[in-house]
Image (cartoon, rainbow, N blue to C red; front, side, top):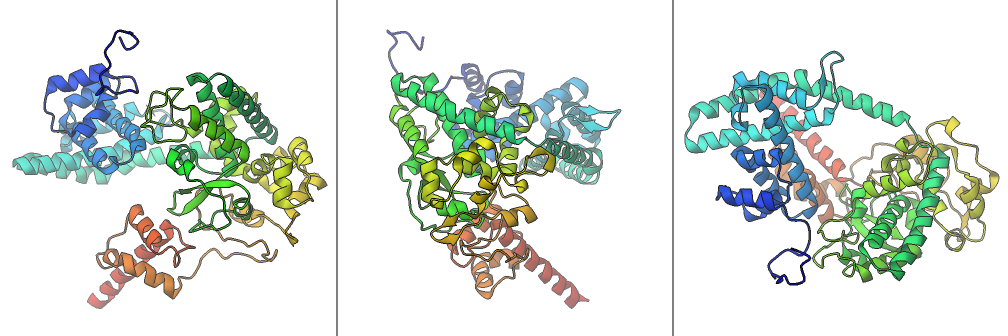
Length: 547
């Protein structure tokens, strides 16, 4: 019907996305469920199956989802996250219905039901009784948090309706949960997660695979840009969008989600200057230098401060082509993202884009080529390999050996955790790390990275070396809080200190934004830790005074 030429177009009908008609019909049949229209639209986008039916049938799950929607309503990117959490709770209810006497989520929250809840969680998270391990430990941990929130909802409902028995049962369930959940679920699941991470960290990508991936991305980029220019279509648009997204992530050492969520209006207001306002201290010397040569988009990193996303001229030309042809290729006008998907309001996912090209590039060990590991072990190498000769000459001066670096695979030993995975660097490639820049000796932050671990754009509070910084200077891990910094924090956070309440991330970020100059070397975690320490000191003082 949607493709029928005789169909009369309804202006109120959504122009993007596949309709989940069955879910919408189910919601209409149930009538007023006490949920907002915004949250109802999120539920309507779920594929109608047993899990979605359970979500709609269970009032507590709907209230749980409504709470999440109230928290994340303004962020379209979180809508998928809300649906994911709803499905997790609904799957738990379905599992409990199969293997225990429990029929809905409200029945979970009686002290006598606790053993049934633990049993259902173990089945859903794939608990192996013989080895005492979870196949999906992260799910077991998430379900624990969901159950606490749902229990609070049930208790609040009971108090509101005057059901003192249910309210007392929910309160007692929470007491049992706090005493036993860690021993029965959380402890084992966290142990499994650590073991999985340890095993994963040992599987380090090899240099040759990273070179293959980078070369493949470059080839696909050129071909996709030509194809889209000659034949605009949704398929060609998707190919170019994915490859430019992957290359931008790799070149900038940024988290995939940060780059994926760049908005179109932000790209259109991109800038090029040496002035880095409120730039995070994790930005390396090389990146700060390149800000003067390349256009950039400033985005907010995970620590709350601004970090640059550098755009080479080849990236910009491809992005401009995507913007020019986005509506022709089916991207809705309402889609706010630079890497928007056709027929949807969302953007392509960076990690999925990289994974797609990893499978295509012919790597020997593709399992190790994840975005996290690539950016952890090869950040500087990939930045240098993506500079062409002219760009390298502009940034580093005439003393450069880009071809040798790019084709011979030279790189410094600290780029890898394991020596046997990397061939020694040639003298020509080594010169890259001691190139003259404007008559001074340029050196990246390799020494700090080798001593303290790689920075992969996660906004860690690391020192900012100047171009003329002394080679032998070292950075001390703990920084004393200056008087100006203390006053800046107190101006915004005293209510938390005096109320003995640890602030949330958003509170710390607002403090950083309001005092950008005074707190330019601090992260949101640093502010939070400072407030927590002040609260601890106050509690000790009050305890001493009582004694």
